[in-house]
Each structure stands twice: as C-alpha cells, then as structure tokens.
Image (cartoon, rainbow, N blue to C red; front, side, top):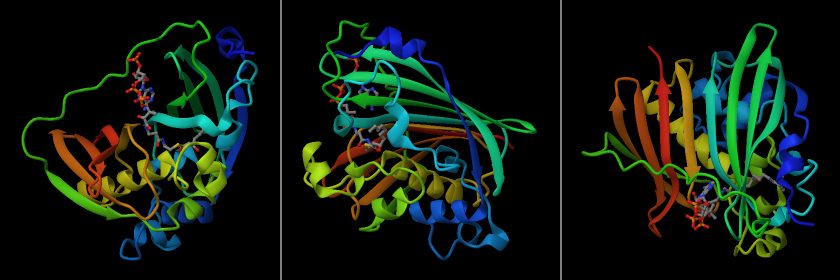
Length: 281
Ligand SMILES: CCCCCCC[C@@H](O)CC(=O)SCCNC(=O)CCNC(=O)[C@H](O)C(C)(C)COP(=O)(O)OP(=O)(O)OC[C@H]1O[C@@H](n2cnc3c(N)ncnc32)[C@H](O)[C@@H]1OP(=O)(O)O
C-alpha cells in the first residue's frame, strides 16, 4: 500500500507529556561534544541549557515519528532527517515538564522520495516553550501520486568573508553517546542497519550535528549564553560519520543574526547547510 497523504494529514496530533532533569541536560550536552573547558554545559552548579535540547527533552522517541496512520508503507531504514527548525519562546529550564503536541503538516511526493513535515508545539504551566518543525526525507516512499510541494529555499551564501571558521572534531562514539539522549534509531549504532540503509557504517544523527553546531555558535557568538536564542534552523545536506571533523563557517548577517554551514574538510562534503541563528538582546 503506497503512502497515503490524506490519512497522514488527517491523523490526530500526538500529545505527550515530557519531563526532564539536569542529568538529562548534562547527558545531552556531552552528546553534542561539550568539552570540560565549558562548565556551563557540563556542571550542574553552573548549568545553562542549550536550546536544541528541546528536540530530545523528555526522551522524545524519534523512532515512533512514523507510527501514524498512512505511513505504514514507509521503510524505516530509508528515512533521513532533512531539516530542523526550532523557535524558542522562552529559555529552557534545566528541570521541567511540558506538554508537546505533534502534527503532520506536509506530505510531498518528490518522485522516488517522500518528504514528510511535522510540527511540535510545547508548552508548560507558564505558557509556550518552543515550536519545532522538521522535514523527514523518506527514500523510496515517493511515487504515490501526491503533490511535489515547494522546493526547499536555498538562500545564496552570504557575501563577504566569514566571521569565523571553527574546526570541530567529533568523537568516534559520538552517535552512541548521543543516542542515550533520545535518537535510538539503529541507523546510528548498528553496522548491519547502516548497510541496509546503503551506508558503509553507522551515520551520525542529524540532530547531533545540529546541536554540536549550535553549541559552538552559542559559545563563540553569545559568550556561552543560550538564553537570548530565539530561532535556529538548518538543512541536513550530507551524511556525517562519527569521528569525522566538521569545519563550521560562520557569517554575521545582522546585529542579532548569523548564518553558518558545515563541511567535512577531508571530503569537501557539505553536511549542514543554510543554518541560521537569530537571537535577541
Ligand atoms: C524510523 C523513523 C525515523 C524517523 C526519524 C529519523 C531521524 C534520524 O534518526 C535520522 C537521521 O538523523 S539521518 C542523518 C541526518 N540526515 C542526513 O544525513 C541527510 C543528509 N542529506 C542527504 O543525504 C541529501 O541531502 C538528501 C538525501 C536528504 C536529499 O538529497 P537528494 O536526493 O540529492 O535531493 P535533491 O535532488 O537535492 O532534492 C530532491 C527534492 O527533495 C528536496 N530536498 C532536498 N534535500 C532535502 C532535505 N534535506 N530535506 C527536505 N527536502 C529536501 C528538494 O527540495 C527537492 O525537491 P524539489 O525537486 O521539489 O525541488
């Protein structure tokens, strides 16, 4: 049975209560490579919360993302994370409980692939906390006769020299450490699953690359203060393997805005594209 856009879009939103503690935040920060020299990520007494923690808070189960009516035919081994956007309505507390509501927003037929969009709204007793939007790229799930949908915006590279270029080595076990925070997809841990998905070895979670880049951006642009971050978005343009080094290039594009991209310099592969970070004073 092919993918059924009408059923997917009509599926009731998934509602979950998410609770987290400083231990979860500390583990997440290690998963995105926080070094011992940055105690605001690694010590409970000085802890600040990297905004991208929102995507794992409360152990959000990425594997169940496609357990919805209409997506039965999608081969889970072929699904790649395509884009991620986070809008922070307030700084995240180190300990919290929130109600998160996730709905399917887009079902696009790209020929051989399908692109599925999801939107999560999370709020606690004090009001909205974050909005997350993501696109999943389901290889082999296209051709169901649906609308192609819009092309992803590909803004031109910022003009002028970058403000900074950071080399960010990734741990060999980065994917194994990161998965303890929430993304237990075997694609990131099991060589046999990676081979089934067409990769020579397990690939890094897109959200690990996303969080790693944000950590570096917050440390270098905001002096390690995540509280002003309001929006962070990026496209996953190529796979990353644990143990590789990322080269993160950053442009200042406004008083409170930066753009960034990451390549794996050994291969020249662009892996994180069109990243944008916006913050307030
Ligand atoms: C079990 C269920 C689990 C569900 C959750 C899983 C979450 C995680 O565990 C999984 C992961 O973390 S996977 C790792 C992170 N992601 C990646 O590594 C993907 C890297 N990107 C790629 O490989 C390619 O860009 C690729 C393959 C994404 C696209 O490359 P191409 O095929 O060359 O695409 P292209 O020809 O450029 O474009 C075709 C159409 O697709 C749209 N598109 C392109 N890149 C996209 C992207 N990143 N996200 C969403 N849509 C994208 C294009 O706009 C194009 O559409 P159109 O033809 O209409 O313009």
